[in-house]
Image (tube, rainbow over all chains, first blue to last red; front, side, top):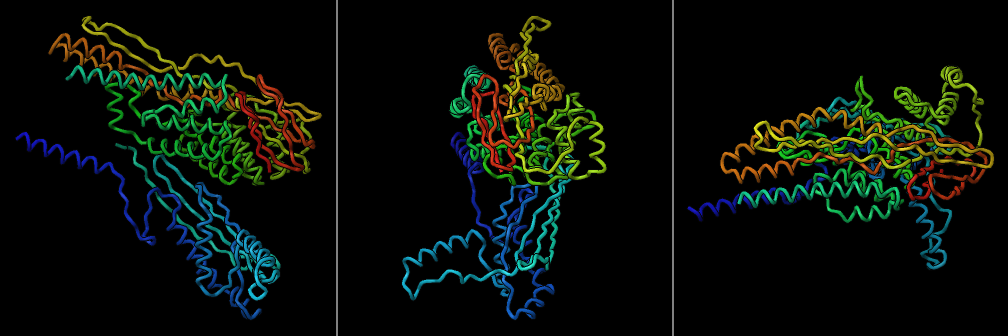
Amino acid sequence: MKIKNNFLFIAFAALFLSACSTSVERLDSQKEVDLSGAWNDTDSQLVAREMVEDSLSRAWITKFVKEEGKDPAVIVGKIRNLSHEHINTNTFIADMERELINSGEVQFVAAAGAREEIREERGDQDLNATEETRKQMGQEYGADYMMQGQINTIIDVDGTTQVRFYQVNLELISIKDNRKVWVGQKKIKKLVKNSKLRE
Amino acid sequence: MQKIFLIIVISLLSACAAQQRETNKLANQLNQQKPQHILEQLQETDPPERDYAQFHLNIGLLQLLSADYPASIESLTQAKKEMAVLAATSISENAAAGTVNETLRSYSGYATDRVMVHNMLALSYLFNDDIDGARVEMLQADIAMKKLASRNSLLGQLTSTHLISAVIYEMLDEQSNALISYKNAESLLKERKLPVPVGLKQALLRLSYAVDRNGQYVSYKKTYSGFPTPTKNSNNQVFSLYFDGIVSNKKQNTIMVPSGNDEQLIRISMPAYPDINHKINRAKIADKNTQLTTELIENLEVSVREDLAKEYPSILLLTTTRAIAKYELVDHANKKDSLFGILVNIVTVLTEVADLRSWNMLPSNIQFAYLETKDSELIVESLNKAQQKISLNNGSKNLLLISSLDTPVFHYQQ
């Protein structure tokens, strides 16, 4: 009887301790997981995909190709975070860039930070690379349009319930003459209910 | 076996009380020692998990005052998350608080803490050259205040939060948002029957002139006469915040009475704040022609007392429940064995301690001043400290954080 009790005790203790240990499960990056209701990778990917799809389906692109005889070159500029959350806009910009490049309908130009690094490399090549492999300065592909935008939120709170309303505004501006050729908007609404009780 | 258990309980609970005394002692030493030194001492302590929010609040504030902004952001964000999780009521912790003492409840932060944490985070982000991060914190502070708002109370409604928000908006050229926040600050000061500082009057005139020259400006011009018409210029703008002193610690009020049948001792302990005896000091900011003194915008001595007053009914209820539970426990033990009953009575008396936890390293009050100057250098003077020179770039917008503690002047410039 005593042995049985001890065994039960050990089994219970093991179960209890295993409940406290850290567990890790690998998830598909496409799978939607929303733990807190805050802006997350799913929102970022979803908004980027839908907005790029929308922008590339509008008249400005066909008009540009018809007039210029080439695909437009686009650059993603600053996406300002005006929301209530500390959102890493770099991941959103990366999502936008990926969607734009993979669309195959626009040329894509590296952002300002990356360009600086490449210019440094060209400067270095100027001194150290062979004549045949050296890339010259002044051959950069100038962008035709810059995409800029904002992430805004409106939060309505009542006790432990929140409605989080995200609005992403993006616009495509012609670098030549500051014309806005496309304005896009994507809205996400989330209802977040927090428990009034905890353990 | 039972006696050993009782001894363990007493020693564990006395360790909790000792931790709190140590934190209070360190808070008191802040007036004499550098925040960096106090930070090192506090980091060496090992608080129980239920005090982590209080620990991280104090650590984060000291890191800000030690100019370690990334660490301050990390600690204060941690505290913010802990307070958010702990905002829900814990059944098990309340049961423990209702039977042993209040310190067995996790520290979930008072209303002032929940808003003030955003102020400190915003300042940390700002001095870390991330004004967008500071803006996010002020939006979160606004939500926190809305959650706490009630018709008959100013609990958790902080003028300093509206004012810091307004300064950040003004630095970002969001004039309309800045005006709204300045107006909210003015309205709270009036509700608290505090005079509106000159810097705030100037801000209301400046922003209303920019946003609504023929409407709101005319109205403010009547209310706050004697100021020149705001003009667009390239002067340096200097917003100054002054952290004066250290907020009071709570103290324990205890009464001990024999029970009606004289068979046991009953002890009741409640937290309380001492009378406010902090003399408000001011900082001085001067250019070549003008000298300004900072003016009160937030008396945290009042706010923390309001926080405790709000909690008093539930503390009283739990204290009474606990006294009854402990009485029953001793009575039950007495019936079994009188010696054991005495021992249990000693334990119930020794474990009856008030919850003295608070964010006790906050300033006693916060003050504000605004200066517009063509000069490229300012002189800042605060309590018992040598004058400090501040360099300004031409046409810059600046935020200075001055403290009465042994710290340099923190300067954000854009």
